[in-house]
Length: 337
Ligand code: NAD
Ligand code: LMR
Image (tube, rainbow, N blue to C red; front, side):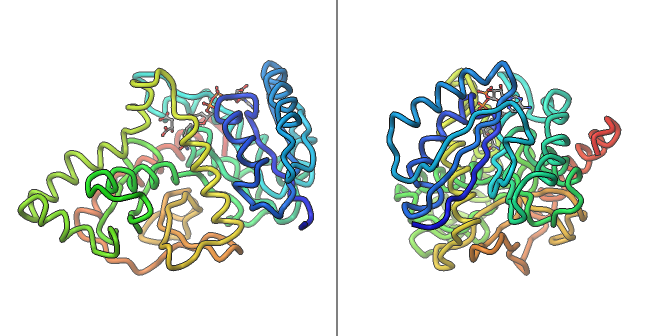
């Protein structure tokens, strides 16, 4: 067995926390040979719920689980953390946009970023799930200036997986047959799910859609009117149908994101999408945490560069990035960065 990895989960007493803990403890995130120590951070009102989950984790007798601690103290929670999953934040309810959560949630991520810088292990990697995820990641990153940019990511893997799910259903194939969609921009209704480079069973999607929809223009119209909004608004659809925001699919995407980041991905399996700090790639202003196509060899996520963008893609990316700029201005004026 390898040395234990310390994984801190904030909001561990909440819905996504409950779905995440058991999969991490079972080895789904870091593999069956790597023991994990779990640190569960909650606010005082959430501590009993996290303590209950800790009792159940003990009862599940996972061979890879090397310990569980529950605390309301960020310094204790992040001490020596190798991976920090920042989930703890209010979810939206029907009729809200994720950006409506800025005022309620943004204040959480500055202190947590600072605590990570001060207490976490030198190799810490941070995944922000709590919404609005991209801008919360930007705040955490700004509050930990001594850490490199590449330690901070936000989750757009759920959107990426949703795009795969929609394409798989359209072509009546398993999800494993779909490769290389891209989520660009913000984890919000403005995100752009791009299929220009996507393949199904090794064949490019665009000609397949053109054939199925009997024309290129009809295929584009389907993308613009159905596919892109369906993926972008899937979170709202889940809230409407389920009555509360996505949980198990979100936890599963967080596992996928972290596993690929830490363990690496087979290049033959294609790229994935993640919110990472921009250094100007694809014209996205420096410092924004925006979703890009990324690969990973285990040492870090790297943006896939040099992909061609047509005018439609450029326009849609610019719209989503403009929203990220506006969110950055909003948190700046709130004094959070
Ligand atoms: P939840 O309300 O069930 O749980 C949130 C938990 O966070 C609660 O137990 C609460 O006590 C805790 N918490 C609040 N402030 C905290 C703090 N400062 N430190 C530690 N814990 C704190 O919500 P949920 O369904 O688990 O969702 C959590 C967040 O994840 C929401 O913001 C939701 O919108 C977001 N989310 C993001 C994605 C994504 O794709 N990025 C997907 C689904 C949900
Ligand atoms: C999702 O995409 O399911 C989450 O971000 C929750 C939400 O508010 O939509």
